[in-house]
Image (cartoon, rainbow, N blue to C red):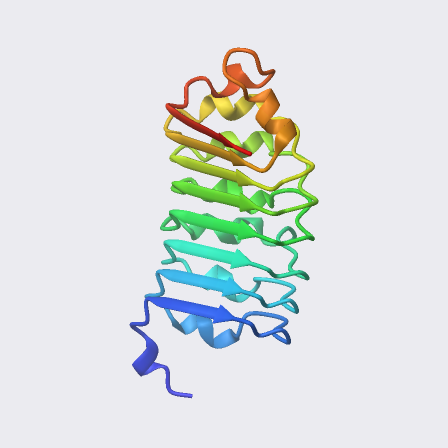
Length: 192
């Protein structure tokens, strides 16, 4: 296949391909790709090896991929993803903890974690996301507290917590157990 006409493609959405098991190898030729959205690909199991070549991505979104494993080999391959500014992970049941490669996305500005039913905690290395400005946590039923390292996220301007009653309780202004960890954040939204 001839890739020349697609080489300048900047936005791609892959939606509702249930038999897709891995990202197509031809994606690695899309070196100008800035936005990649993958939705409703329930057979997708891994982002590797193609994702490592998409180093110009600025926005990456994965929603409703029931078989996707985010953790695993290749932590070092994500060190080149310095352009990534926004990451949205939603409805990925196999996500039990945030993958370690995330800590290398040091230019990340917005992180959305939504409907990850098996996520039980946020890692200490979250502090390495020093450019994070917005953190959105929604419908994470097993997340009950925030790590102490939230204090290190000094550029964080917005923390939004929705549909996580236990966490909303620990983040209540002045009285919640986690309040001191997030008191420096100018905009905190607790939505029931």
